[in-house]
Image (tube, rainbow, N blue to C red; front, side, top):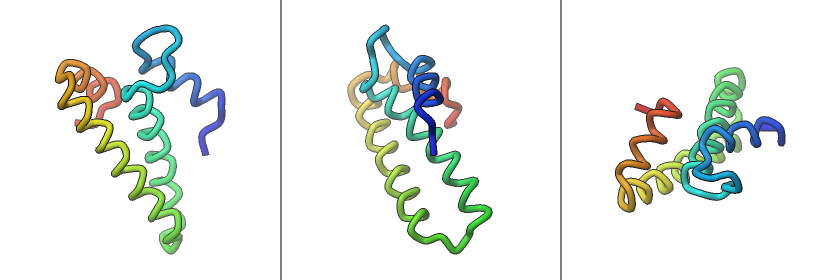
Length: 87
């Protein structure tokens, strides 16, 4: 689970402007951190199928945001992928 402080720090690293909290970049950064933490949880608790379903939903949501960015602005897409280290 991401704390509020951690979430604010993640948003600060990915935001476009000072008051940005909901841009696709910020959403992708938050989802990536959540996915990483949940993946660690599932390595320890491999039978937790409810969390596995949540993980799959988050991955699909992140993919949707990334596809939107790729379609709207290839430069912004490339920037966020490098910042987060997805590829």
